[in-house]
Image (cartoon, rainbow, N blue to C red; front, side, top):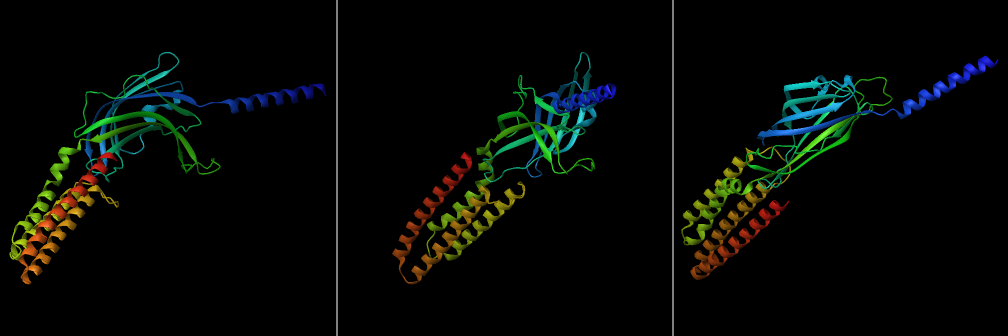
Amino acid sequence: MNLIKSLLLSFFFIFLSKTSFSQTETPDTVYTGIYITSIHDIDFKQKEFTVNLWLWLKYKNKDFDFVQNLEVPGAKTVVKSFSTIDTTGNKIYIIMKLQCVMKDSWQINSFPFDRQKLRLSIENSQYDSRSLIFVADTLGKHYDPRFTVNGWSIDSFAVSTKIKAYETAFGDDSQPKPHTEYSQFKVKIGLAREAMGLFFKMFIGMYVAFLIAFACFFIHADSIESRFGLSVGALFAVIGNKYVIDSALPESSSFTLVDTLHGLTLVFIFGVIASSIYALNLLKKHEIKRANRFDKYASIILLTIYLILNVYYIWDASKA
């Protein structure tokens, strides 16, 4: 009987020790660092960009095999041009050269005074957060300060880690519910567009069209053909300018600065046309002085309000 009790107690203590070990078991840590050598081929219309980078990882568990199991969520293509593995000591050290074509979302409400966030993240496709946790290596620089992004300037750069939740078990029937979590190493790069040159390049046609319509006020009110010819021509020029700019931008359901400025210009050109019609009616009533006076005040009021609204919307977009 004593022997049976001893065996039962032994099994009980073994069970407790195994249970406590499983409860205190922690995921392995992967120290991860990145150094970006270039960002190029920013395709604003297709919402993608290309990034060249060095990625290194330090960990103990040989089963992780990042050469085969590296996952870059959001990447269109990933090309590993170089990789080396150092297994000396009790840690594995991997460094690899990657070129990733990333898909991202653009915020175009303030275009061309927009600021964009480029995002890059990595995961291990085989091991979830119960087995693997990323820790960011924050020593040193994360990008080459000598490289430039054409038309942009880098105003922020941050590396971090997080737990990414997926509401699926990826077909694993052993999971009690369709929910898995993976550790994720994240890079976020803030870009500010060098906007002023691009702004004048894209909107100069619109402003010239408005000035052509505005020139109607300096044509005598009885030259109705000249007035309406200039105004209607300016109207179509603004519409054409908007279609040219829209063709270079991704589709958006929101009302952008491009829409605001073109819509504003169309409204004020219509105001010029309406003023011409009113001045013509005064002229038909033989009120020449009143028609001339109306043209003078209408031109000042329309131009002043148009300039104030343009300055306001452009300033608001540049500060967003």
